[in-house]
Image 1 (cartoon, helix red, strand yellow):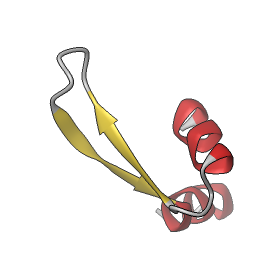
Image 2 (cartoon, helix red, strand yellow):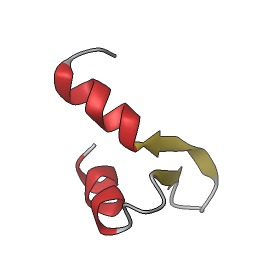
Image 3 (tube, rainbow, N blue to C red):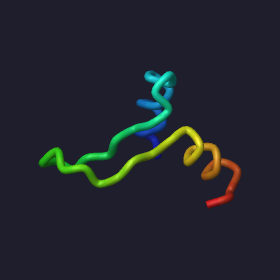
Image 4 (cartoon, rainbow, N blue to C red):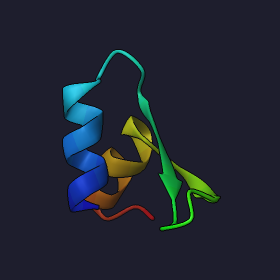
Length: 43
């Protein structure tokens, strides 16, 4: 979650990070809420 967290912090207005692979294929998303839940241990 490190890189996604950095991106979300830099662009916090958006609240979402699109996760892509090396071929730029969408793999999923990470939101501010996902990060918060992970930090407090509620996956």
